[in-house]
Image 1 (tube, one colour):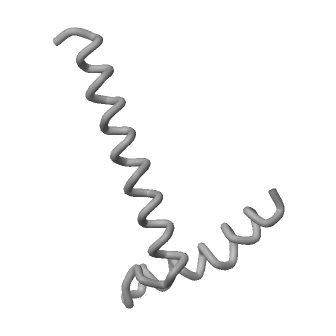
Image 2: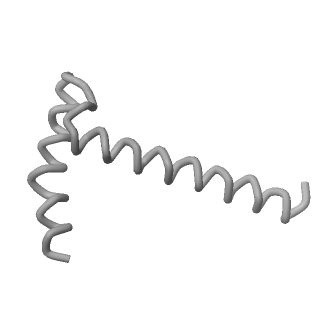
Length: 57
């Protein structure tokens, strides 16, 4: 496999991952990420750590 085609595939993968993270961050911010323990932990971390960091910047 040539380097150029591999680079293109990796770039497309990175774009898909970035889009997923944007959608997931929106879900967490709206509290729509679920009711499980991990989802609650994630929402708590987002609200207590990440939101204040964005305000500071």
